[in-house]
Image 1 (cartoon, helix red, strand yellow):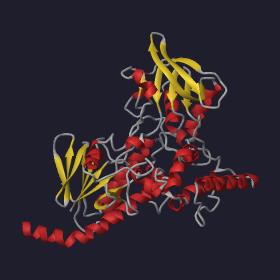
Image 2 (spheres, helix red, strand yellow):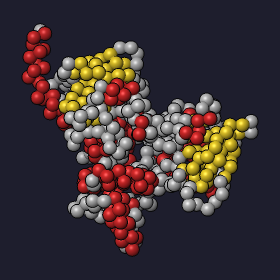
Image 3 (spheres, one colour):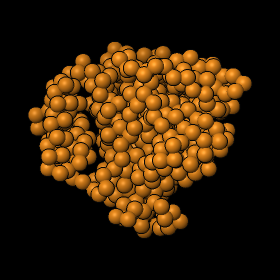
Image 4 (cartoon, one colour):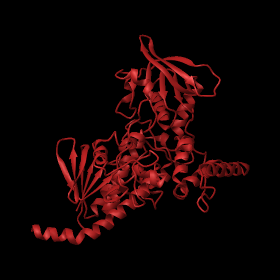
Length: 474
């Protein structure tokens, strides 16, 4: 039997590893991933030493039931011996992201050595996926194609979408639309005035990268809400609160419960981090209890606030931002983009205050502009030719909240008629419209295991027919 995995970042690689561990007999796993190595994806392929994982290594793992696996691997392999800044005084480790990618590949190889599964890395892009009989034909960017009996969609996060106001900058060397492209910041000079559009984790990484490159110029980060990703507590904390026993049924009720829990924690001398960790832990029952309209309301009004508290910045990166701010080189502005014009003296940008704000519009001049608005999940189908081909055939649809693809509770894709496709599944964040919190690595790792078990069950049911076909060929 042949399983094609579209995408070989963490989601696709974790799924393939878990399927290999569950394989009872021969199965061919083809991972279609254009990057030269599996397991990295957008986040963990970065070679920039300033880019670090955003949670302690002790909470990062490819095995959902073994939280400390990565931390033990680091210490056993001496993976941060050449990086003294990775380890904090309290012994928490925040390694460079490339270290985690190396860990994922190593664990995959260990699993394959003990499995009857055969894995192949096809270093191309999937250009189209078409149904052929009971299976699929996947057309590749190099002109070839492979066949598969089952397809798992594990594509990476789409690149950020530049706001329409920045369209006049298209083609300029110092307009960086994709900050994750190799050497994306190479065009930025040491004294350049830099505008970063977006204030989340990507912005934080950009500031840290600029510091490492010796940048001395000013940096302005702008977003509609002006929210910065929060940092970690000074010491590990336990999850505090129960949001799953009687989950809220409206977004407002959920917000009020979280605020009450944070206030109670503060009164007891505890930080808000433990409360948000409890919300993350209970995220699936919380999401399932909310009606569709309330889920959409939560995404529309509260997602930005959740993101900056849930996805925290590494202490080393937080320190880089603090240094730039202390030197008067970094500031955050809460505003909308107005007119943007590239002139002889630089890029002139009008920043308009948000509705209800008093400050007058601000006009600033920059030498470079970097887009850090986060993945453009709303265009995930249109921006991916393989997914677009499935959509044209009516085999996939977007979820109701604009977060990814519509899937059922077993991660089978729902077609245009709402029918689950038994041999077309999603592993990873594209399924979060159904499962809610499915961006953090622990949840993605667990989801990969669940999808692998579902596929393994399907392969077991197909085994007699597959063996009969093999005998007929012999």
